[in-house]
Image (cartoon, rainbow, N blue to C red; front, side, top):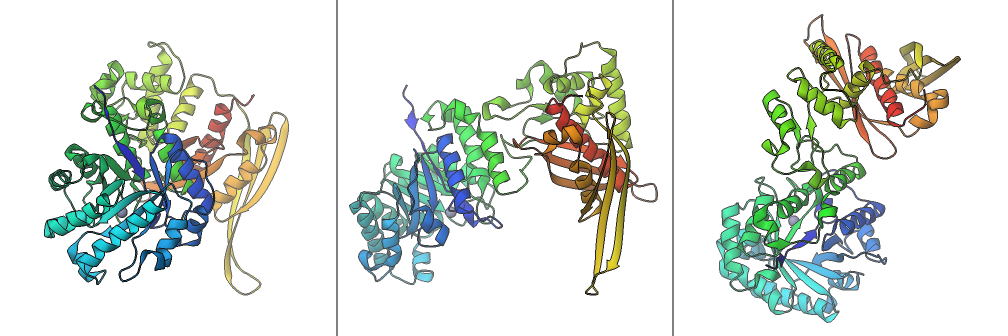
Length: 531
Ligand SMILES: [Zn+2]
């Protein structure tokens, strides 16, 4: 049986750019467009030429992309002709393969927001689609507020969609602009639309305000729509857009869809999805959502004892798809609930081979339990766990010794009479027979210590040059006067590898020092630095 083609349309660079706190540079936009193209996305909406300098520049330059690069903009303004509307002219002049117009399809919105008549709204759709077709462009029409509009006045909403289709728009996209529609409503309404516009010309653009943008997109496909619009990681205004990082694997890995439909993302490209999702976060300098479906760091993590021992026997016992299919990893948490099988599986994952009945495994397990009771959190700090395991199995070289460190925090008056806090750290390190001293200032004691520690590690310096601390989390455990501090440090290196280390002590500097040391030593182990 031949499978029907489903098209994916990404609007990360346009609707995703509406996200609170997200600002794409031109270079960001080009990098993301390249990533989406490589992934196999059919349409990439680059932005709104004429609306801001970056988008204008983006659409003024030639790009070499396989995807249909799409410009977004409004239909002609009411009361103007298509050739006499500067916004529309800029859109038609943009170097784009396709043009996606947005027009209202709700009678209420036309009256209140646009302050024009239903007839003029439809005439504007017809004129704009015709003008873009006349310039040889593929045309899409985003029917804004379609579902709300349809519920109030189905005839008018349909008339807007039909006008675009009749004028030759390749796609009529039904938008749930306010994001309040529910899956059964979407399925029913799309079912009505495809009676008058063929489904292979109908798209869905869902927002996530009831946490159902993905479900709404799939419901539209079930009802006959053949284009899905969404964003990477569900980026977008308010609660975001439909998340392509969830939609793509569902279409590829769930029989209901994979047997009926084909998409541009190959099985091989699907394996890069986790990387694509995290790369976007990195580019935006945001932490990744650990619990994101398919691509989150916790998506295939198992903790409890019974589940973990079943997963070791057969992963299908507690996994709905194989993590490798989307480029993610299975992980069994090492925690006080863990049994020996858990530890063995985790050791294997990080590449440490030991015999099943090796006594050292029991010792390691006891050690982990003891340390977790003292406040260490190895399930969050996999790098510290790996180091602990490697040390107990005798495979971590003694790279260097920190002989002493000093940290000062001093508050004084500056020359201009303002109060200023100054922090300095001095670290004495022994590497082989060599003694090294480094001093550094920092914006706080941990920062100063970190900078001093990594300033000069002699022959190991090249191995840690790309090391960067990306997150620092502090938690005070069991309160009161006997409180201990747990510090978790997340690090990253030049190739984007990330790891987390942990330190515990009643003293926050000491706890931070432990976590910093683990991070550096872990990097040296990973880089196969010579002892
Ligand atoms: Zn939108």
